[in-house]
Length: 78
Image 1 (cartoon, rainbow, N blue to C red):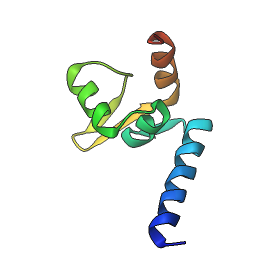
Image 2 (cartoon, rainbow, N blue to C red):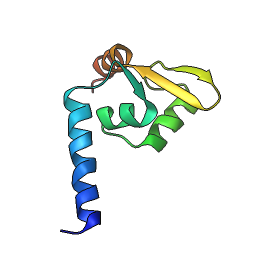
Image 3 (tube, rainbow, N blue to C red):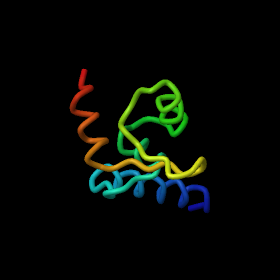
Image 4 (cartoon, helix red, strand yellow):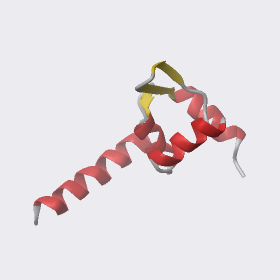
């Protein structure tokens, strides 16, 4: 097994962990993983005023509360 294969398996395990037990406060990447979209989609949603509520304490940090992401997901089931 190569290093790249191991890294891929670790990434898959991390994604499974986030989906099954998301942290209370998530980064944009963690929220994207939980929702099954890309981090770029999260960025586009923020710019378009769509998606779950988030906090941005400074220009480089974005955080999502798990409850807000779950509530948004339930509101936008289609």
